[in-house]
Image (tube, rainbow, N blue to C red; front, side, top):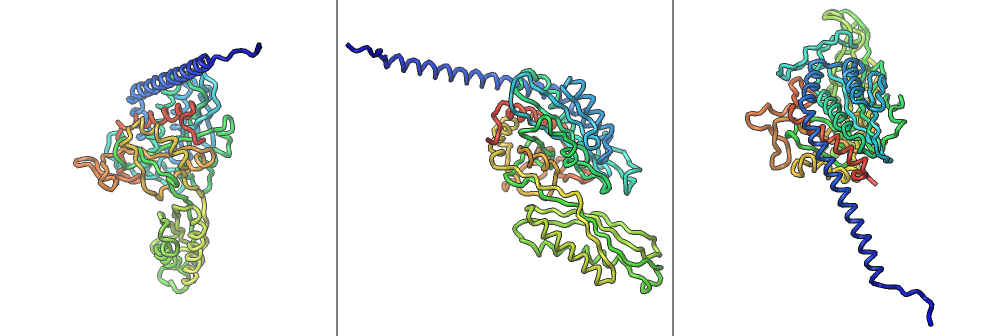
Length: 459
């Protein structure tokens, strides 16, 4: 007689079925709890909307230039402290602020949400009753009118709102959120350090180290639309300074000296042909935005300084463009009997969205604004030094539409009839729709939650 135990096949199957049912029930319960939290995040964002708009208007009325963001940083830090965050770190790379929110549940991930806080030396012609009248008389090269013509006031206010929302559910967050308010994104004066690279050097991300960085930029696109791009969302950039040196002389006797002005003009004319010396399939641009001379109407001065920017859609083109620009400047100056010294400063790598991070982020983006409002955008030669964060730690950078526009049949933004038109960033008339700011709050909050819970990761 056998002594082997009798195995009931039906019992084994029933046990497996019970385990499967329990697993499905557990997954359904977790999905239900996640849905409830996401709905709570949305409701909380709606409640913060009036305060976010008030912050944005205050910041717009009181803008501060790169490395001078004293009051902006104070407003941010005071709010983060009022939320009772675990840490509020200030004075990072100038006036940078980092708030640390540690969730009440264990989790291995840390998401960094980033906003830039500086303004531009641009007159404010946006036409609102909260338009800036600020003037910075002490900024190098000034005095300058100051305005948030790039939308950083929106970025700052939206992230302050997201901090409010996420702090409200901290006990249910599995991991850590870093609220990163970065100074000097527009570039500090050339004699100063600042910006994203300086924040990294100051140890802003050493404890804890992010497993994802998320950021966005408001843009002239239909209100509430989110634009994304696989690959380089923004271009590689560098500041260029060309100092053309001649020999000072009286304006009535130019033959007795060397006039650097014609040489500078020849360089600017020649720059318009550089695009023909590199591949036409990868856009580049060299722009001279400021000309600075020494002298007066009847004096031929010693120097003329050209200040500009180089942008390359493909980072590997930057060295070749710089080589050709340097050659052009030196040889053109020599043709006029002058000399030219060329320096490249404040290099910024392109913002690169990998396919894996975009694929991981699309479900959350679509949940927030609707699938029909999440669209792929074309390339741009704009830059943002958030690339120092996203490229190092991984993550996602998107565009948020904030203007009176629709998309045409080719997917390009066109002005709405009777709207305020399309106005590009850095234009004195740039504007942003206040009602759209709550969308930015929701994006920050839901991306953070999705990453911390493992729903938004690149592997």
